Image (cartoon, rainbow, N blue to C red):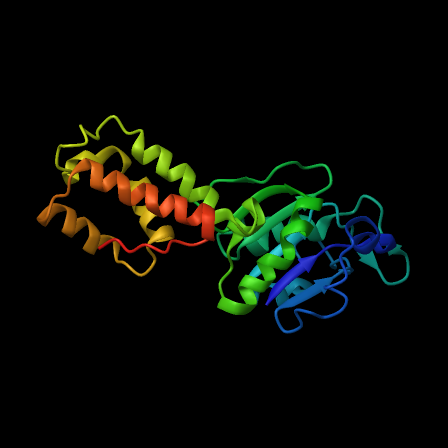
Length: 243
């Protein structure tokens, strides 16, 4: 289950972002929307948040105020937000976490070290990409935060970026030379990420072994990188195999 924690005061989700699939239940069984969380007995009390500990992902509006059943929203009181950030999810270390707010901008993330945490993203961007994010989760069962960070075509953008890093490497020699594993030493992480995204049916170790045992010309290596990149841009997927 993915939890969307947003006070949604004054029906802002529909009025400002024209979002109705949350309330319409399009993702019932996959998304739970929480607009009010009552304040705990003390700051150390997290018992009222225990339901979040089994979440697959938490999307947290960082200005969500604590709620009192008698007083309503408590202006300026955000103890629940702090507890979720510091105790429940801890920068995505325990549960994938996305922090969003109107005051934020483009997504801030470091997917090289942590695929489970977006430290900030503007609220309208979160809602623009939420349907595709949830649809992917519903169809695959996986939490893909790159859809939130970069949009549903994140793979194409990421592949293009990685391809540039690979093709511009000063380790690659003349086109007529043969590629050696050592030629990939400086860009090995980029190459592995590129293969995982663009050739998901191939095992990276098998490809590396193939390069080592049956060296190909640099020009053929570059052709494979370019073909995969162009295919993603045109079709949204790679129609070519590594072989």
